[in-house]
Amino acid sequence: MTIYPQEKIGLFIDGSNLYAAARALGFDIDYKNLLELFSSKGQLVRAYYYTALMEDQEYLPIRPLVDWLDYNGYTMVTKPTKKFTDSMGRRKIKGNMDMELAIDVLEMAEHLDHVILFSGDGDFRRLVDAVQRRGVRVTVVSTFRSSPPMVADELRRQADTFIELSDLAPQIARHPRHDHDHGDADEDVGQEELEHHFGAPNGGYLESA
Image (cartoon, helix red, strand yellow):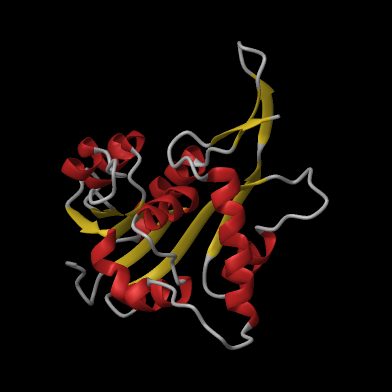
């Protein structure tokens, strides 16, 4: 990866998209290692993590993951999911965080030299273009080695640099642990909730019975 030591960098993580990409490659993310990796490459200003929450449930399995990230160097951006009925009468749940991520990138651009976007969503191409025109470099982290590829071709072309997620796996993959560290246990629970509710990386929709 091309990150200069003097660069002020910001991480913007589309939670469901990154999780789906990693699972498509057969591994889970160790968020502590991810933060340490990018902190060692430049001057980390902020690391944002975006996810929607189903707050009408009595217990949220994803809450331990959200709390763990919040206490361990990440800035959490969340919002409640919305339920609606489509034209076919099917109940669905919407949990798209694209707008929140885009606003934060634009607001932070003047304080950064380099934006690291963890998403393959092609809807972010115009956002990347807008930030680049402000003199900020943009790196996209996703994968084209999954089937189908998780990164949109137009987003990959627009980025200054593309990092293949599978190439980072040796450094950021979470390995099974046999200790009793609560942070790891919480992360396991939260990841399972992400898979269940927001496994679709770009739509953010879940059909409900």
